[in-house]
Image (tube, rainbow, N blue to C red; front, side, top):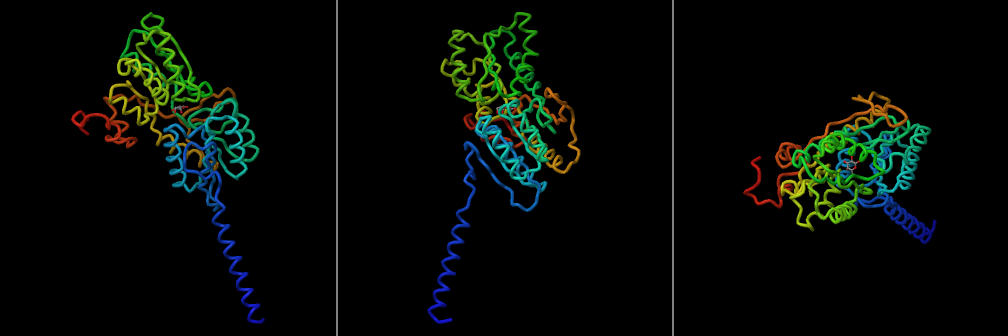
Length: 368
Ligand code: GAL
């Protein structure tokens, strides 16, 4: 081959290898995003090595607690040798349904779902089973479907703890109930638990429920609007708020603050979000219900891998979802106020003392 021909061949090979290298770097997954408020965020930890692949469909990752669940679950799954594909539906039922179909198409063995709407998502269970995929309802139950397993907390107990704490502080007076999202089955269970405690006091005439509203998608802004309207409608004569979780309590406390009532009106929460733990030690929120998320997420990953392997999930109970008694693992929630914050949330390392007491003068910090 002549000298010139060799040169030409070499330059073609060089150009082709450069083109190939460039294109390999450019093929990233468009959904690959680290931020938590993407409409559909896919964190693909799968390295296609034939390991167990789990799909995890979140209603949303915009609320703090679900970011903890994701991180603990993925960490535990990796310890067990499984990969996790995470998607967030940004609180939209249709998005969640199509994301679950997409996860099934990616060859997962188990589909873990925190449903935006426990009834709307139900048909995906049959679709998953047809594809040989097991379904785990995580934290929130999927209704009227042959769900393989359910991992959560005793959610009626959550509501009981909230109402018990508030009625201890305010045994008589005007109560407002600020409930969670109407699409979330858990919100109904929290309310049922609350009412178990409140109803006898209503019957005795000790407390009067002056209003009850549900905050769509658990949004802080929606809770703020509800609380603002409730204070106006009742001429600020509200003595206590039984509030279903911390993201909504944040909005309610903002509305109370505007009327100089923050710290004067008892208010409950749930999830031990950092901002709310700070409000508790500052005296503006009465309590939260701490659900050791690390325990739930770790158990969730254990159950998902057991389902993938066809092993026993070690259920500790069954919960009826309108169709079947779903084999369940239910964990125990803990009532936390400023008196036991150190012995629970801080001792577990869920938040640090410095984080929680950030706005409290150092000389008022508890001895650890
Ligand atoms: C519920 C969950 C609560 C709270 C709420 C808002 O289903 O059990 O812990 O986080 O959703 O996300």
